[in-house]
Length: 338
Image (spheres, rainbow, N blue to C red):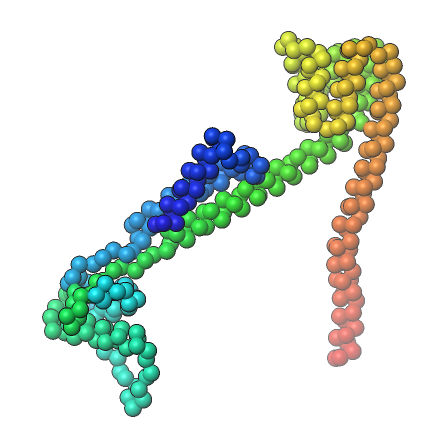
């Protein structure tokens, strides 16, 4: 029970501290991971609490507690206290089965607690033998003038479920953080691979006589005709929509660079802003230079990816070599030993 209360209190402190600004948990995982953590821990701890309340055990049984006899003997586990001092758990067999004692001449060495437990079970057996009730088996409330208190055993299923929920919630935070990190890396790679094409197409449109705004609009229209989605072109479409909705051209380009988040796109946005502010006459040359550098960067990136792919192919190549060697050598070995 205490475990569930502690978990609820910790969740309450973290939530209240985050809302009040006392505890900064924004750096822990992602927003999605934190929500999943809270949901899983709350659900698991609530279910565990219900299990602990219903099946947690520790219920004190009144004196003379009766147990239904069945055709086949069965065992029940109880916690027993003598004069308020808990002695441990005992297994009561209902009804008590008479065991054939083998090696009667040899006395088994028992500890003091085991001897006391054996004497208690013998007393319970004798107590029920005297009652001779064919339907019920009783647990006495006193033994040689000493008060007996019987309790149902504690069930740790609820605590185990809560602990598993907490562990699962932490695992979800790590998994979601890794997934988001992987998504950011893929987004970065996609932006980097698309940048040479974007800057090249934009440069050609500007050198053909289009204004910057019309070049953006032309690229957005051409992209919307395709079914494939690319992040860079999606941001271009968003920038066009912003300009059509009344946002200034300069602000739209600035937002475009910030949304992309890639240093190349920020450089591209800066060139566009400088062109609007200062009216650079050499913008075409600057864009052409940027385009050449972008293609060189892409070539270097493609070379690195090719080398990485070659390295990954070494493992399957080694495995295939092992298979070929086995195919060649196995018949020779069999014929030699045959």
